[in-house]
Length: 332
Image 1 (cartoon, one colour):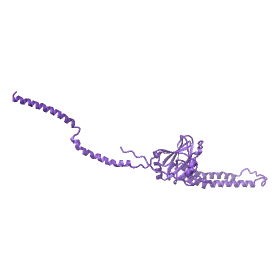
Image 2 (cartoon, helix red, strand yellow; image 1 turned 90 degrees about the vertical axis):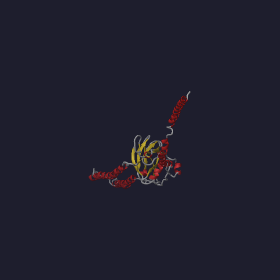
Image 3 (cartoon, one colour; image 1 turned 135 degrees about the vertical axis):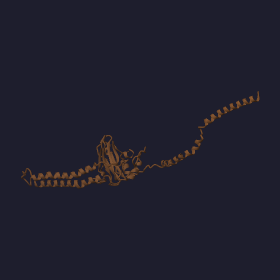
């Protein structure tokens, strides 16, 4: 073989080797390119900056979540002797702690009682006069008078005037008792069960408080009146109108608190509504006032009125209790 032929053979071999090497290493480079492109590595520090900023902005949220949740606090208020409960040797209404109660008590003391006493004394005097002057011994010859126009006019007009005097404040008091609750008033749903009470707070998470009577021993130990003390009271804020809604779960009950001038029937299948306003903090006792069954006499009511901040603290102690309006939905 000549030198030229040998050179050509070696050139072909080198070209073949070069093509094979190019195919082999070129394929490997193309496969490795998406795994770690130079541009991505260069951009990595830039992309990390927003992530760090997002982490910094999330820090307050994490801190807020880590903050302890306010679970509220509540210590049952001690009742005040003679306030919101019967008293020894009491013979009239209990002292009133609501505007309606004060109006009702005023009407009783200033209008009704004087009229009742005056009429009773007048009738008694007339009976004594008739007994003394017109008996058979003092007046053997009976009078034959058939009628007297003046007396008939008097005994017709005077009762009418008396009824008018009573009717005006009575109708006003009745209308005031059924004024609707203002917008935004706290709502408490009172349910009468056989034989205990349930108090639901739809404006504060919808939780329900079940109230049963304490035994006489437990009541006296707690410093409360026997047959009126309960294990869980109906807690409400003082100094603001409260919408009370009553319903019976089984039979007719009646939610009544004398010192608040409040009574409202709880009828199955029907919601009755009335406004309760308690002027000052305190514990006020009542009882079911509708004959509802064998344990009717063991359904006491205990209403505890607290300042608004303490009421909200009590709400937070209840399972699912919430305070304030529900948070607004985020904007789209």
